[in-house]
Image (cartoon, rainbow, N blue to C red; front, side, top):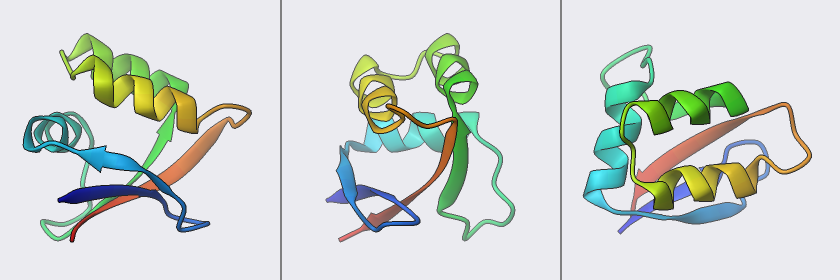
Length: 78
């Protein structure tokens, strides 16, 4: 299982499928090959959507962004 969390609070945002993770990794910049965290904004989510990311992923991220300008997210395999 792949878990997506709010990096600052540790709160679980949801679980990802391999397809959702691939879309996230393909569209966002990583600082190293071991990088598993990203800073996202609403513009980032729009970019993911434009790149064809699954609606389930963009919906999850939009819900997590409610009331925020940006946030750090991190994924892990459990």
